Image (tube, rainbow, N blue to C red; front, side, top):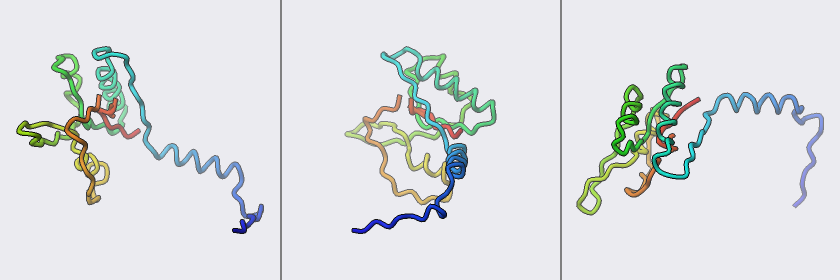
Length: 137
């Protein structure tokens, strides 16, 4: 296979490529990962505090799935944030709740026709968007 050489006159300048990268970067969201070595160290709490700060700054924030483990302080932080309702499934005779991926996609892209498969009932998202929150920055 013969590779064609590009004409240097037709190549974009480094400055043009850098500007295009900057435009692309500013138009996309950012992922922030909250890491903790053990349960109860404050990953979800910190993520929810960050979500409230972003919301106060005018950034669109929505919680896709959060597990509060019954902690009153964490439950209080969930209040005031938009939440995607959980999907309820019958799994071996028990009702389990999971992230409703179709609802997340529909919210992000209202005109999209979703054909996605949902997560397994045992999937854990302690993410968020910690994946428990989705944030568009």
